[in-house]
Length: 481
Length: 105
Image: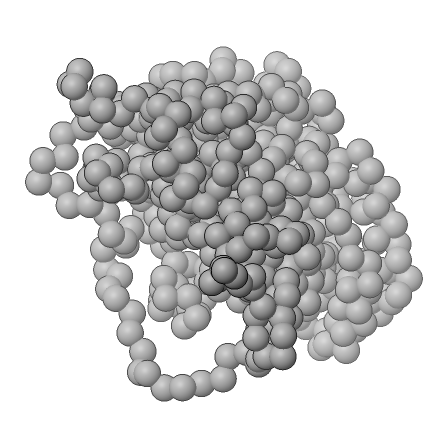
């Protein structure tokens, strides 16, 4: 069952009444985006010509396409043939891919109006959208605050009503944390559920693509469109894609929901704690069986992640050497100088920090102590989840320990910034699906997110529980037309 | 434990060494900044030592059911030469052009 207030439905209904995705429609849409985006800067750039050309193609598509004409924003690390795909880094400032990512092909085939250019932290290294070479995105609810990151532009654009949905990527919380901070719904599917062909790699054992939407019904629809096996991504998994939209509107009586006590210990703000506890009460009233569970290795997740993610990132970013694509420094003395000067001039500070950290932890003599140790701790963290899922169907926690913080507040302290992903990182380490749904407003008027996690390929459980919660809590952000 | 800790003190030299391996050069200010920040981060990460990982296998893939994925070695079209060179910073004919590797005498 789909919700009447679904943003995508509103779009579709409107588009059905005006079947031509006319040039007028596109002109109005682009004017609308540009007007709203002046203060938000959810988009690093807007390519009006390409959007207009796409709309003309959509007009020729059959009327029954799932997303015909629905504007969907794309994080700028997902390849679109011929479009600037920059990772918001000087390194790729002029890079135009020669192929489309798998998710872009999927969106085209359902008739979505793809809009590129959503702002992000440089190479997705960040939790606040402040490391973009195009400057920060602002939170639409309070523009003095960050929108979260790294998919900050993706979350802000949905919240501000610039697009109906957007596509982000999540390596340690980059979809869920900004969704939480902007009061929208963000989903990181199971590792392997959505093909990453055409996603510019950050940390390959953790990266996953997913949707950011206004509500749970839209998330289910988007996941149906994006999911599926793709032989071009060897980590993509060959299993059927369920009709996620059929999990909506279901009763959650008797669903066993675990509350891991380790997520309520340190650094969590009182406002976040209160809203999440109230959310758990709502789930209990809906008939769910609430269980206290323990994930004893939770406190090691951030350390584990900050070995594994930078190590993989330093390897993935070794390809940016100025030779075949990307930025090349002017007049290099020789090849080595070309590598060093190009990387030096085009990478921002956070990128250099993570490359150094990853290079160090992988360097001779430290591999066993750091990377190998972290991969063993990772096994422990996954085991925690697998034993929890023997006694419960899903787990609920806060998405982030705090609400959106101020612009510039944490840029001087990398560790403080890293800790804002403390609750989202474990799901990436274990490869399990996780979703953030709005669960109210803290005393500073900023939204709080409830994170729901389930076992591998159990996205239906997330949809079912999240939708039941959304409908009864009334926190769904109503669409203002 | 103390000995171990000493081993991981991040010096200017360590930062320079990692930078050299990563083909990044740092100015004096960055060197100091990164030395301090990497020390902080690695200091925090020290807590991993507390975890008993005796006999634990390292994660190689998050989904235990996943095995190596093989395909037949059959030549197929991917992208054209022209496409491959489309983003080249510099090119000559059908080649990427880079600075001289062998220095003039």
